[in-house]
Image (cartoon, rainbow, N blue to C red; front, side):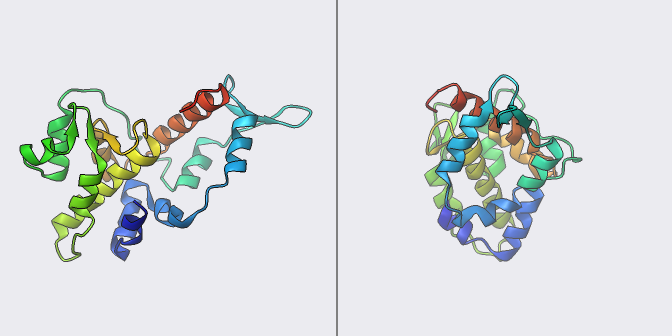
Length: 195
Protein backbone atom coordinates (compact mmCIF):
# COMPACT_ATOMS: atom_id res chain seq x y z
CA UNK A 1 0.00 0.00 0.00
CA UNK A 2 2.86 2.37 0.83
CA UNK A 3 4.42 1.87 -2.61
CA UNK A 4 1.05 2.27 -4.28
CA UNK A 5 0.27 5.61 -2.62
CA UNK A 6 3.83 6.69 -3.36
CA UNK A 7 3.34 5.91 -7.07
CA UNK A 8 0.12 7.91 -7.47
CA UNK A 9 0.04 10.42 -10.29
CA UNK A 10 -0.54 14.03 -9.27
CA UNK A 11 -4.06 13.95 -10.72
CA UNK A 12 -4.81 10.78 -8.70
CA UNK A 13 -3.73 12.48 -5.48
CA UNK A 14 -6.07 15.34 -6.32
CA UNK A 15 -8.86 12.89 -7.19
CA UNK A 16 -8.64 11.27 -3.74
CA UNK A 17 -10.53 14.39 -2.61
CA UNK A 18 -13.56 13.03 -4.49
CA UNK A 19 -13.60 10.10 -2.07
CA UNK A 20 -12.93 12.27 0.99
CA UNK A 21 -9.52 10.62 1.38
CA UNK A 22 -7.07 13.28 0.17
CA UNK A 23 -5.25 13.45 3.56
CA UNK A 24 -4.37 9.75 3.20
CA UNK A 25 -1.71 10.55 0.59
CA UNK A 26 0.08 12.75 3.12
CA UNK A 27 0.04 10.02 5.77
CA UNK A 28 2.23 7.59 3.84
CA UNK A 29 5.45 8.63 5.59
CA UNK A 30 4.05 9.31 9.05
CA UNK A 31 5.64 7.39 11.90
CA UNK A 32 3.04 6.07 14.34
CA UNK A 33 3.36 7.53 17.83
CA UNK A 34 2.48 4.48 19.92
CA UNK A 35 2.78 6.39 23.20
CA UNK A 36 0.16 8.87 21.95
CA UNK A 37 -2.16 6.02 20.96
CA UNK A 38 -1.71 4.39 24.37
CA UNK A 39 -2.52 7.74 26.04
CA UNK A 40 -5.67 8.02 23.90
CA UNK A 41 -6.76 4.57 25.04
CA UNK A 42 -5.92 5.31 28.68
CA UNK A 43 -7.96 8.54 28.76
CA UNK A 44 -10.89 7.24 26.69
CA UNK A 45 -14.20 6.73 28.54
CA UNK A 46 -16.06 3.95 26.68
CA UNK A 47 -19.38 4.80 28.35
CA UNK A 48 -19.49 8.54 27.60
CA UNK A 49 -17.37 8.30 24.40
CA UNK A 50 -15.12 11.19 25.47
CA UNK A 51 -11.55 11.65 26.61
CA UNK A 52 -11.36 12.34 30.38
CA UNK A 53 -8.27 13.85 31.92
CA UNK A 54 -7.01 15.95 34.83
CA UNK A 55 -8.02 16.02 38.47
CA UNK A 56 -11.43 17.43 37.56
CA UNK A 57 -12.00 14.67 34.98
CA UNK A 58 -12.56 17.24 32.26
CA UNK A 59 -14.06 15.92 29.04
CA UNK A 60 -12.89 16.47 25.50
CA UNK A 61 -14.08 15.06 22.22
CA UNK A 62 -13.89 16.61 18.74
CA UNK A 63 -17.16 17.71 17.17
CA UNK A 64 -18.28 15.91 14.03
CA UNK A 65 -17.29 18.95 11.95
CA UNK A 66 -13.83 19.02 13.55
CA UNK A 67 -13.42 15.31 12.95
CA UNK A 68 -14.39 15.76 9.28
CA UNK A 69 -11.85 18.59 8.97
CA UNK A 70 -9.15 16.30 10.37
CA UNK A 71 -9.85 13.53 7.86
CA UNK A 72 -10.61 15.94 5.01
CA UNK A 73 -14.24 15.32 4.13
CA UNK A 74 -17.19 17.70 3.81
CA UNK A 75 -19.47 17.42 6.88
CA UNK A 76 -22.35 18.93 4.88
CA UNK A 77 -22.22 16.30 2.13
CA UNK A 78 -24.61 13.33 2.28
CA UNK A 79 -23.26 10.71 4.66
CA UNK A 80 -21.92 7.47 3.26
CA UNK A 81 -23.84 4.67 4.92
CA UNK A 82 -23.26 1.00 5.23
CA UNK A 83 -25.93 -0.82 3.24
CA UNK A 84 -26.72 -4.38 4.22
CA UNK A 85 -27.76 -6.38 1.18
CA UNK A 86 -26.93 -9.54 -0.70
CA UNK A 87 -24.99 -9.85 -3.93
CA UNK A 88 -21.68 -8.32 -2.94
CA UNK A 89 -19.79 -10.56 -5.37
CA UNK A 90 -21.62 -8.92 -8.28
CA UNK A 91 -21.00 -5.53 -6.73
CA UNK A 92 -17.27 -6.35 -6.60
CA UNK A 93 -17.30 -7.49 -10.25
CA UNK A 94 -19.12 -4.35 -11.33
CA UNK A 95 -17.00 -1.95 -9.27
CA UNK A 96 -13.76 -3.13 -10.90
CA UNK A 97 -15.24 -4.39 -14.21
CA UNK A 98 -13.96 -7.91 -13.59
CA UNK A 99 -15.25 -11.02 -15.31
CA UNK A 100 -16.86 -13.58 -13.01
CA UNK A 101 -13.78 -15.91 -13.07
CA UNK A 102 -11.40 -12.99 -12.51
CA UNK A 103 -13.43 -11.78 -9.50
CA UNK A 104 -13.85 -15.31 -8.10
CA UNK A 105 -10.06 -15.78 -8.15
CA UNK A 106 -9.78 -12.88 -5.68
CA UNK A 107 -12.73 -13.76 -3.42
CA UNK A 108 -12.75 -16.05 -0.40
CA UNK A 109 -16.04 -17.45 0.85
CA UNK A 110 -18.28 -14.93 -0.99
CA UNK A 111 -17.48 -12.40 1.75
CA UNK A 112 -14.00 -10.99 1.33
CA UNK A 113 -11.47 -10.16 -1.34
CA UNK A 114 -7.77 -10.90 -1.14
CA UNK A 115 -6.10 -7.48 -1.39
CA UNK A 116 -2.76 -8.51 -2.93
CA UNK A 117 -4.15 -9.60 -6.35
CA UNK A 118 -6.28 -6.45 -6.43
CA UNK A 119 -3.18 -4.34 -5.77
CA UNK A 120 -1.24 -6.29 -8.42
CA UNK A 121 -4.04 -5.78 -10.95
CA UNK A 122 -4.08 -1.99 -10.65
CA UNK A 123 -0.72 -0.85 -9.29
CA UNK A 124 0.94 -0.47 -12.72
CA UNK A 125 -1.82 1.36 -14.61
CA UNK A 126 -0.70 3.98 -17.15
CA UNK A 127 -2.08 7.50 -16.84
CA UNK A 128 -3.28 7.67 -20.47
CA UNK A 129 -5.99 5.01 -19.96
CA UNK A 130 -8.70 7.02 -18.15
CA UNK A 131 -10.99 4.04 -17.47
CA UNK A 132 -8.19 1.99 -15.92
CA UNK A 133 -7.08 5.02 -13.86
CA UNK A 134 -10.65 5.33 -12.50
CA UNK A 135 -10.71 1.62 -11.66
CA UNK A 136 -7.26 1.94 -10.09
CA UNK A 137 -8.57 4.74 -7.86
CA UNK A 138 -11.52 2.58 -6.80
CA UNK A 139 -9.15 -0.29 -6.01
CA UNK A 140 -6.91 2.01 -3.98
CA UNK A 141 -9.87 3.34 -2.00
CA UNK A 142 -11.13 -0.22 -1.43
CA UNK A 143 -7.69 -1.28 -0.14
CA UNK A 144 -7.36 1.82 2.05
CA UNK A 145 -10.76 1.23 3.64
CA UNK A 146 -10.08 -2.50 4.04
CA UNK A 147 -6.58 -2.00 5.38
CA UNK A 148 -7.09 0.91 7.73
CA UNK A 149 -10.74 1.45 8.61
CA UNK A 150 -12.39 -1.95 8.38
CA UNK A 151 -9.31 -4.09 9.02
CA UNK A 152 -10.88 -7.12 10.67
CA UNK A 153 -8.80 -9.59 8.68
CA UNK A 154 -5.32 -8.50 7.59
CA UNK A 155 -4.77 -8.81 3.84
CA UNK A 156 -8.48 -9.12 3.04
CA UNK A 157 -11.24 -6.65 2.23
CA UNK A 158 -14.88 -7.10 3.15
CA UNK A 159 -17.02 -7.07 -0.01
CA UNK A 160 -19.61 -4.96 1.83
CA UNK A 161 -17.28 -1.99 1.18
CA UNK A 162 -18.14 -1.99 -2.55
CA UNK A 163 -21.41 0.00 -2.30
CA UNK A 164 -19.72 2.47 0.06
CA UNK A 165 -17.06 3.24 -2.55
CA UNK A 166 -19.76 4.15 -5.07
CA UNK A 167 -21.32 6.51 -2.50
CA UNK A 168 -17.90 8.05 -1.85
CA UNK A 169 -17.45 8.58 -5.61
CA UNK A 170 -20.59 10.70 -5.52
CA UNK A 171 -18.82 12.95 -3.00
CA UNK A 172 -20.48 11.38 0.02
CA UNK A 173 -19.00 12.18 3.45
CA UNK A 174 -17.23 9.23 5.03
CA UNK A 175 -16.80 11.11 8.33
CA UNK A 176 -19.70 9.36 10.06
CA UNK A 177 -18.39 5.87 9.33
CA UNK A 178 -14.80 6.81 10.21
CA UNK A 179 -15.97 8.39 13.47
CA UNK A 180 -18.13 5.36 14.34
CA UNK A 181 -15.26 2.94 13.64
CA UNK A 182 -12.83 5.11 15.62
CA UNK A 183 -15.16 5.20 18.63
CA UNK A 184 -15.81 1.44 18.35
CA UNK A 185 -12.08 0.75 18.25
CA UNK A 186 -11.36 3.08 21.18
CA UNK A 187 -14.15 1.40 23.18
CA UNK A 188 -12.74 -2.07 22.50
CA UNK A 189 -9.18 -1.00 23.33
CA UNK A 190 -10.23 0.79 26.54
CA UNK A 191 -12.21 -2.27 27.63
CA UNK A 192 -9.16 -4.49 27.05
CA UNK A 193 -10.10 -6.34 23.87
CA UNK A 194 -7.05 -7.31 21.78
CA UNK A 195 -8.22 -6.41 18.28
